[in-house]
Image (cartoon, rainbow, N blue to C red; front, side):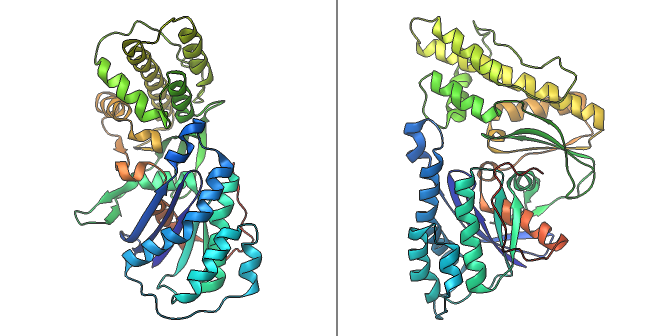
Length: 381
């Protein structure tokens, strides 16, 4: 089965074509355009700008993917008024669509997977409407995909030693997933395949958001997570001069809170007359230490309570080397029989490959077509 997948939940425009038999996933074509440089001046993602860029980028990205997949541009197709109706709020995308799609033959795909949510709704709508228009033009079914489920699958993918080929290992249930990104911090329990229960989540800021806001206070560019990590790494094992709180560390729940940590950093920095490079490094190190301690503590509690045999860590923050190492050491010392799955760096941030994989399993489960699909910025697992 070949799936064309579309991801526009935030500031990456991504499309892929994946061929799978349910066991092996071969990436025929994959392309991504990041908007990071455009959003840097805002210190975060500006939704209307993200929406505009997705409209501009989807057709160019699709062209690249089709070329990589080896699909030829040769057969003229027809369009109809339904496509104009679907894309009437995306005039730039509609113009590009009508110039390009009618000039190519319908690619050899079986379905179109698209991120329904969660994410920025203006950005999500662009991808969804694009998928709907392609569905009408090519007469292919649409598969709505939960972005967070995509991150779970991204961590489960393993390379089989060949270029652009992945497979999913045999999984031991229950599975506990720690999803950490710019918009989410969740602990998700799965006792059965494709069934989820959220057992813990942030009550305020997501961990990635806390990284970005702290980086902004330190005068670091967006995205802040990698910049904080670079500074923290330079401190090494030296004890920091600062001590920040570990919010909700002693609570009886698996929920998180990072707002207080962020506020503590703010008040600490206000008392410092000059932010030297050394001070920034120590602040970054203590902030990262606090985050890691909270993530470990809550995950450890969930592992004990639910007897999870597999731990999955997904989302953009999973690329943090110190966080990954801390979890590897925790499992080795305290949960030696629990298997850890983390994504490759290229699959840790938002991408279309994970949407294709999640889309495949959702399509197998439910093959119903849904052109009434709507964006849901708060879509839950």
